[in-house]
Every structure is written in structure tokens, then in C-alpha cells.
Length: 500
Ligand SMILES: [Zn+2]
Image (tube, rainbow, N blue to C red):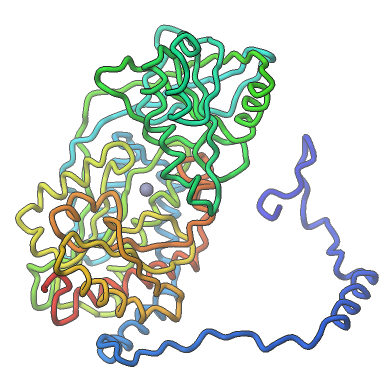
């Protein structure tokens, strides 16, 4: 209501013209009577002040961490940079002109920031182009649908595909159908992602996106449509990478926005014949050269030991790539820049890495692991932020090292405890820190993910609504604070995290 106002057909309300009803006399009477009816409230439970007793990091690091947090929340530089990425450059689909503009702008700006080195490191990337796309219902009524091609989909270069639709819930559902129930049709996968319900969370729902076209084509389908993977109930689609199998025919695949998905599901569950027409200009061009952006603060005493921090610079093309993952990029970048500003040059090197091509191939992640193969044993830790820009809650920690991981976890929890004051102190075990870190996690680098409250993340993820207005500058600054504090301690502490 606050962001969009009233939604009377054909017009928008101006909220400023609405009188706040609380000032009216009957409301006051009501509020007053309610107060009288209530017992004296219990004293509010206040979270205990952080106790650092027995925490070996508290004495040495409470002071620099306070300075980092204090300075981070006094300024909005991360937000200003995200705003530039989002509104002056825009969505940064791998291989697009925008992605290259972003690489150039980041390197130039990082140089001006005073990093010891700011450079691009070559990555050969796939180039997928969306083109013009129209998805319509042709029966029982004519209606253009809020839909988009899934990333990597083939197009309909020989003309639109028009066919009857058969609905299933998920991959198990299509496997149960006989070939003659599917052949020549468009398969519609209807599974809905649910907010705060891990049973129907992203990992489960996204199966339809990644395997739907393969499973549908195996039964002879001519196209695949899925209910868009998102937690919103609005009418915009969410894109994202889909998969093909080398030995299964390729068919086009689209995602449909929630409201139109409801229409399809409602008609199909009444056994009404529904027909769709799919026209996609999507196509893939030859691989092209792009880059990971890398910038450093050389270590004061042990420059050869590295704490790598980052996010991914590429995004999907429908929106601006604000929460996914422009936010992660500016969080890592500004965290390092803040250390420069505060003159906190740590013992070890802090390296900012803005990965290219996370969304459609992880080529930047692979290129980083390859280019820096010889240094990986000297990466004492890596941190990625790829979960949006909402309140920071803490970190995940994954270290592929049987003897070291338990002690490593305790140390990361002790450092995390210094961030209790901003609510970013929860450290949980598991994961690779982020998709871009998985190749270096696999070879033994201790990896952390900066975690955010993700309640609303999938409302906007991969959709046209992933835009700068979804990012709160203060929460973004708190993420910078958490990233900077963790990075500083890991790069400064006497015994490296990866020693055991
Ligand atoms: Zn991402």
C-alpha cells in the first residue's frame, strides 16, 4: 500500500490526500478505551548486553570493530554506488554491453578509491540474448500473459508455438504422465514457492525451472511453462537459469507471473481446454571475453596471505540487479574501502572480487579458481554476500577440512559475537559461502556467506522488480559494517583461520 498506493482500476491514489483516521474523535475514544481495558504491561524484555567473557577476540578487536560499525552507518556510499550500478548502468546480463560498462566503471572507481591494485581478470563467458518475447493464452480467451523466457532457453525462430496445455505440479508429476498425455502439448508446472516454508522453498521449487524443460521434452512436449519461482503474488515473472540435456530435444521454456499462473491453474483444474502461444526471440551467440573485477589492500605484514570478499557483478536483465547481486558487490567493495578510510590496513591482504557470470554459468568463479590456483592454499578465508540487502543476520561457515572445521567454526562464532549490537552475530555451519566460492571451498578454503533476512528476497529475485527502491540504505550500511568487521578480524588476527 505504501509503495503503490490505492489500486482503483485506471488510476492511482495519492496517499497524501487521505486524512489519517487516527486523528478523528471516534478513533481516539477507541484507542483510549483499549488502553484502559489493558492491564499494566509487563516490562519489555531487553536483550542482554553482549558478554565477551572468554572471547579471545573481544579485547583486541572490540575497538576497531566499533570504529568500523560507527563509520559504516554514518555514510551511504555503498548505496550511492549501488544506485549508479542500477540506474546509470542497469541490468548486467553476462555478455551484455551493460555488464562490460559495469566492469569498466568498477575498475575506474576502485582506482580512484585508492586500492593498491584494481584490475579486470579475463573470463570467457556465454552470451545469451533474450530478444522480443510474447506469451499469450489463445483459449478459452485471448490474453497476453506476464511471462518471460527462462535464461538459456532456445527461441521459436521458426514461428510461434501454439498448443494445448497440460498441468503438473512438479517433476514427479510429469514422470507419472503417459507419453500420449504430453506429446505435442505445452507442459505447465504449477508448484508455488512459499514464504518461510522450507518444504516449498527455493531449492524445492526451482527444480521445475532447472529440469522442467528436460522432463517435458522427454515425453514429447513442444514447450515448457512454469509458475514463476518467487514468493510474491503479483503479476511479474521471475527468470533464472534453466537446463537442457545433451541427449534430449531442446524446447523453449518460460516463466509466468503469479496472477496469470493462478488463472491458468484455475482453468486447468476445471478441465477447461487452455491453449498457449509462445513466441521467443531468445538465442545464444558465441562465447565472449569479459572479466572478474579484482581490487586489493596489500597486507601490512603478510601480503601473500589473502582474505577474499565479494559478490557477483552480473545479474539478470529484467530488472536492475539491485538485490541480486549489486548489493553484494557494493557491500564487499565498501567494506574494504572503509578499512582504507579508517587506516586499518590489516596484516594480510584483503582482496575484493566481483565475479562475472554467476547467474548463467559460474564461469567467473571457475576462472578465479584457475587463475589463482597457486595462491589458494594461502587464502585464509573467503566471504561472499549474495542474499540481498536486508538486515544482516550473521554468517554461514563452511570449511571442507575434517580436522579444522570445528575449531574454525568456534573462532568465526567468537568474531561474529562482536557484531551482536547490530544483530549480525548468528553464525551457522554449512554451505560454501556462496555459489561463486564453491570451486575454492571444494579445494579447502574456509568460506563464509554474509547472511541477510531473506523473508522478502524472493518477492523480487530475478524479476523486473529487482530495483534500487527495494534497498534500504541503512540496512545496506549495516551489511557493510558486518562484512568489514569480519574481514578485518580475519585479515588481522594473529593465527590465521586456516591454520590448524
Ligand atoms: Zn545472486
